[in-house]
Length: 211
Length: 211
DNA sequence: ACCTGAACACCGTTCAAGT
DNA sequence: ACCTGAACACCGTTCAAGT
Image (cartoon, rainbow over all chains, first blue to last red):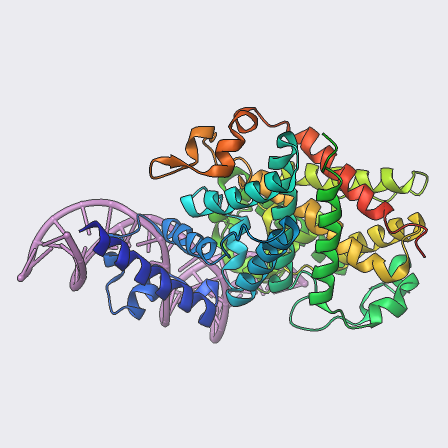
């Protein structure tokens, strides 16, 4: 009987996820989710104790979508695969992905994802004292990058910001002025993410065979 | 007349900020903010076009609280001062700080903060082609760390997670098992942040005198 | 076991009006 | 110029009841 219950839970999470991506996170309400399943709002409370609980269910589902570890790959390929996976999940679910940073997520799925990174770093040869910190360093940056991308923190919202934006009153800000040539170019976000991963890789390498 | 208007705007932002930190972000409503100022909800709409607009005002105020650049310091001290400043703002306003990652923030205050980092990196000797990307790398990590800390992503919410938490069914997850000794220790978050800044500093240094 | 209905105490926002 | 009042179309959630 337990299985039917979790099956229905998954249906509800799917409906909520679809609704949030179609109409935005603000349009996600107990009432709208219930409506999409032809249910009364109160029916959902048999499966989730509150709306926050449902949001945690969504976050859990996102963790599930991350790639599984593949021990046949080298540690830096594994790390890159995980990072790319997170970024892909973000681009697939841009409306709800930012919840990853705001809801603690100590669900089994979240712990499992962290554990995967622990294993990669340990197998790479990172001394155990540093593993948990480096895991937080890497995951914080990767999730932060993915959220920044989908939430518009990087590109400045819907409208594409031109270099001329950086004015205070009449005069240009000094840093923006000195970078006017570079800031005028389009950013290749795939390439930027790759370069960032190179930097992260070097950080990890700096901890190898040091102890 | 313009000055009175912005003065009242600041009052409203202050009230909203105080209310959010006292009672939580969920308790922040146009009605509750208005009530705290002995106003009708509708009075706020003379100063902010919508609740989202008010939230942007809050984010702008947070940017304002960041330390100003001090050109007499070395580039890595400047970078560290900015990073510490961001983390302090987060600990001062834990309820609203996560908005920094979710609201695009192309306000003048936000651009000014980015510009400060541009100047630090340029003066450090980072080649102009890399400056914008490295700025995003650094700011993404620093803000991400600060949010993770205050939102409980690192510590697993209110309850302190013990090592024994990492169970799937009956068996321990492999990475957690191999790190059981280290995961049992308390984390010194100040020290962790410092170590992360050391890593970031090395990343920045790797771009110096390369071109 | 699973769902519905009515009710409570809230929301953001529009439109009109007051001084 | 600045604010209020009433109204509209929503919320999450509790409690009781239905089958």
